[in-house]
Amino acid sequence: MDAKEAVRARFAPKAVLKAVTPEAQAAIPQALVVEAMVAIRGFPYRVGRESRGKMVEGVFHRIERPTRAGSTPTNELYLVDGGEQLQISREHFRIERNADGYQLVDRRSVCGTSVAGKWIGGEEKGGTVPLRDGDEIRIGVDPTPFRYTFISLE
Image (tube, rainbow, N blue to C red):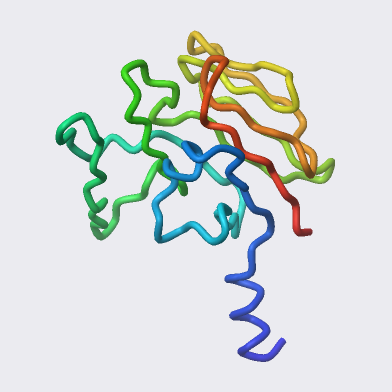
């Protein structure tokens, strides 16, 4: 593999999460959004709530997440949940790839996660469900604005 192919293999997305609602798109850091999608470049891919920010006149403003030598983030994607009742846990779910395909693992979230209409987690129970290309992921209790479509590119 030449140098360009190695770079392409490292940075090319393996899958994407596509925002279904405007609120879902607004929750993603804007630097990561391309046409309402965020790239997944590796697995496991962990998603949780952004807790670094401040409320100004009822609007949550994200604060740049500092990187420190030797520190490891707990999520690859930090979503903003500025609602009165939080839907997204700090460590909500992860997407894994294994020999059988993909699976979504609820990381003992408070409000749970739905994949293609099947609810898992909630009340800090956790759970695992198969994840297929085109499945809708709903984060939090219904009705939730945090809805994404999983699109596999492998």
